[in-house]
Length: 137
View 1 (cartoon, rainbow, N blue to C red):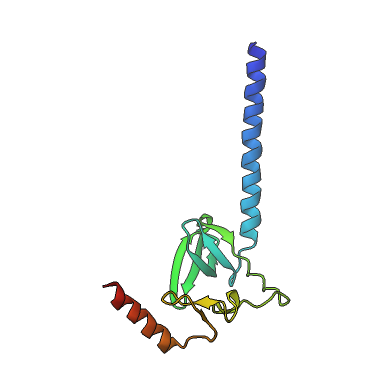
View 2: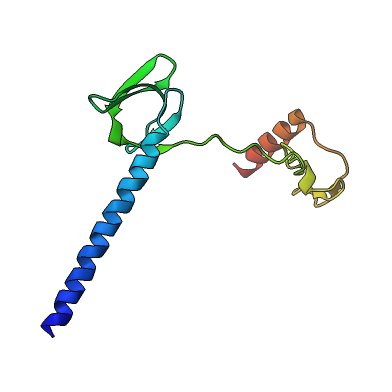
């Protein structure tokens, strides 16, 4: 029974060292991508562009917005932000309004229940909404 416990302890310790080695490799790979001009994110959620790297003191100077600089520890930079992929040109265009959701002639007015054949102008819509508010009072 005690041999089984020692084997389990040995496996547990082996897994801990293996995980630690993987995280160190990932951190080294990430830091190899650091260079001035690279977009990054810090561990506390700030996004910025690397301006300068101080190897001796492990500091990175980030430009958060034009003219705003922040100096953070090198290990605080946790992610290199990849540029967003451009949208597919072949995808259909989405209209800015809801006109595509209804067909002309399918609209009904709440007062009369009759269908409206033409579209309402913005002024007519405001007038109708104001009149409905007066009826409710």
